[in-house]
Amino acid sequence: MPQRFELEATQESPSVLLDKDQNKFEIKGRSLPEDAQTFYHQIRDWFNEYAEDPNALTELRLILDYINTSSGKELLELLINLENISKQDKEVIVKFYCKESDDIMKMWIEEIAELSPVRVDLIYYEEY
Figure (spheres, rainbow, N blue to C red):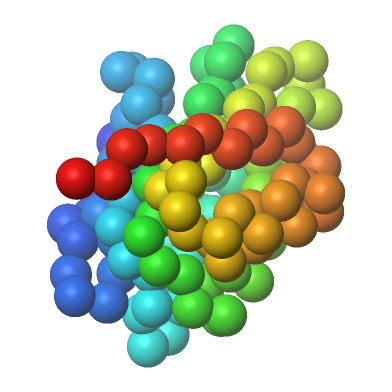
């Protein structure tokens, strides 16, 4: 299994860093890729392989300024897939970062948290 998966951010897609050895899992930026299914499929594939031998704690940090509808659907699928890790008595936490003033993102994260089979924490960060 690849220990590390990395993608640089573009105008339409977030940066991705999935690093088993450093125990760092982060998706950051804007998520409105033309083909969200293909973009997130490669991330789900990596996590599916990772689930064969996961770390004791998997903390996925989602720091997204904007999410289009298709990305939102794919992110929920990713969180559902992460349940495979938690079923192995491993801890899975998703930390979803949001600007406190972004009411739309807050509502969306709260809805995702209700639907997610893994723990989702909403964390506010300061605007500059």
